[in-house]
Length: 478
Image 1 (cartoon, one colour):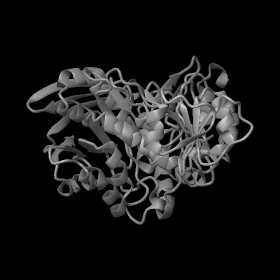
Image 2 (cartoon, helix red, strand yellow):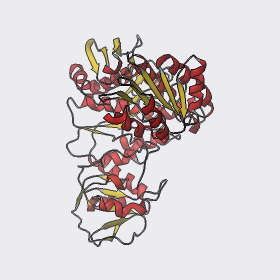
Image 3 (cartoon, helix red, strand yellow):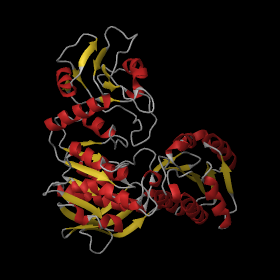
Image 4 (cartoon, one colour):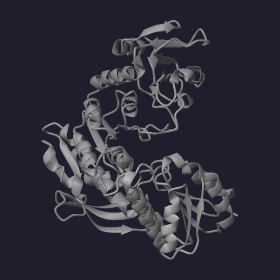
């Protein structure tokens, strides 16, 4: 099915692949039956896809009914290399060789297949949730564990009822540990996903005062309760890694029967960071302390706000047997997740591409990085959506921060007008508003100078990732 994001299932640049399961195993797990094509029960498949554009040879396409009906994209998925499609009804005008497996509910079939593969591979898992920082923490944890283990990890932000099962369709016999991002929208969602993930270690990142997706939840307390479902699902011998510097996360400690390990810069954190040195867009360094050991840590991704992600990663790795020094070395090699604090250099510009999404806390952190550079600083800030009653105050606060951190501001979208107004009220001289990404690019091509540093950040619906990609091409600046 063609999908462009939403609820943590944006299409990655490749299908999850290289798992090995047979048609017989898939039919047994899903209760499906072949209604088109010639079945060979020993046929093997190499993973799953829900987006026809990224179906790869050997994969199984699941025709899900979400914002669009995946049955309309079965032919496209097969043309892209999918070997079979799981459907809820017949699809016509397909090649004779096309293999269709009919089930009562394609999404339920996906879950049942994932559960069967999880049963067959009971490797330890690290579950990660929080209102901000999940994906970066997931990548850091996978990198730290990768010093010793072969890691299965969530692709992109596969953190919901579609993405988490899809991740387990990528499990191979050689995988030794799983690192799974888990999102929250409704009560019980994380608990349900934990029944599949079966985490031994649970990480909760942060629950800020102005959380993302606030409009979908009744209160910050409800968000905290939802996040707590992760550590409530941990076994008695599990480990709950909680951010000591976030009072809401720290307060969740009594809700788990697992051993609690606090991480952060707080004096009582068992896994503590000291001597934090942020070097602008060049990255961050700090000293990690754990169980009497200390180790210098270097992160190649900019932003002081990434220190908690690194600490959580070190905590998970050391709890699973990776020596602190090896885990720290591995962190120095991690890549930033796509469109999250990516520093993209051209002969004309430096682009800080943080365009994946936006929340008040994340925008403030990105502006802090922009404010640390010694070039002309240009902030392109889009609407922060789904903030509900927090929206007006949050956009005003971002505007005031932009006035301190940037020399030029471009607000993209209707809500960003509030950002620009607040920035002007705070004394910013050069601030502009545009309706969308195309207009922003036209304006930037007129305003940018050689050597500028440009931050691009906004909610996903604004598609500012396309703007960041355009700016990162060498011809973008004049």
